[in-house]
Image (cartoon, rainbow, N blue to C red; front, top):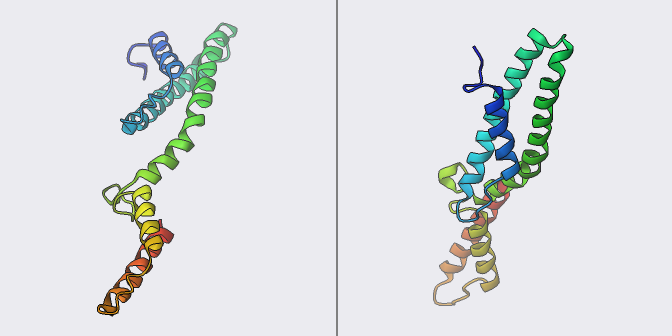
Length: 151
């Protein structure tokens, strides 16, 4: 049997259609971009698997070339669409990642930087009545710096 559930024509039509439509790109739902990349990667793998099987069985015949070209064209489209968004998306995912996602930064990079820079700009408390607060502030800033370096 074929690894393409509904056959090549159906798979190519949906695969190419989704690639031409492109990544969702809705900033309110960044997870949809990741789902799109995952879905398209799976579709590509199925197409590659089908194409390799097809080539091994029928690739030697001239009549098979049109089908091979059609599949390879779809795979080129995949590369041009997905490769152009994959790295920026990976960077954005890393910046947005929180501790629950495996990051060392509790609420992501933007939040960490905003609070860290804000605290540095505000400066050391410097209240002579509570010198221990200065030490706590320095210790906290050192921890924040270490987290940023680790990230």
